[in-house]
Image 1 (spheres, rainbow, N blue to C red):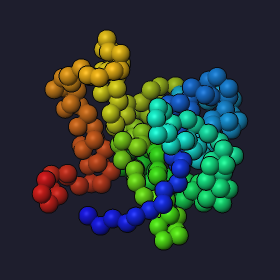
Image 2 (cartoon, one colour):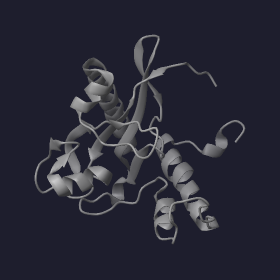
Image 3 (cartoon, rainbow, N blue to C red):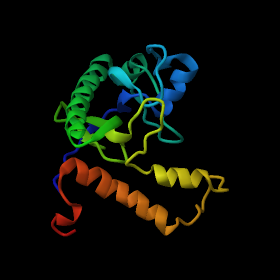
Image 4 (tube, rainbow, N blue to C red):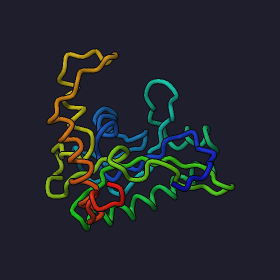
Length: 203
């Protein structure tokens, strides 16, 4: 693996093309997404008028917090925040178009950016199921909660358990492990890439 050292930006760089997750919860309460006014009457899983850049803090403890561009500029500088927005929106639009050709909607995705030899670059979390919400286009209807090709089956199972979120966690059933794995390598990777994960050298 070839790696480069980067001076990472102190924000998470999120692009949203559809209304879901914490953005939908905020919209229900305030009619905004990361403080930005949105059209009235949007439903869960509705496509936004255009993709939007919605940064968050990069918390060292606890959870990241959604912020607006003004707060992002305070953290990393106005020029860096705008450059990050431009890079991430372009990457999302290119990826979303590619995924759509294969029947997958990229609801939202998170990038991590940093400077390599003075140039801003995408450094980590590039369109993986861990950092993105992938939906099957055939099941993506406004007002519904489309199934995600991510760790949602694991989240749903954990939420249904009598667990206080403190160690040790409950043991995972084999079917939950299998369902999560299948969503990652079959439903997401193989549909988008057109390749079999088992065909990689050393698989």
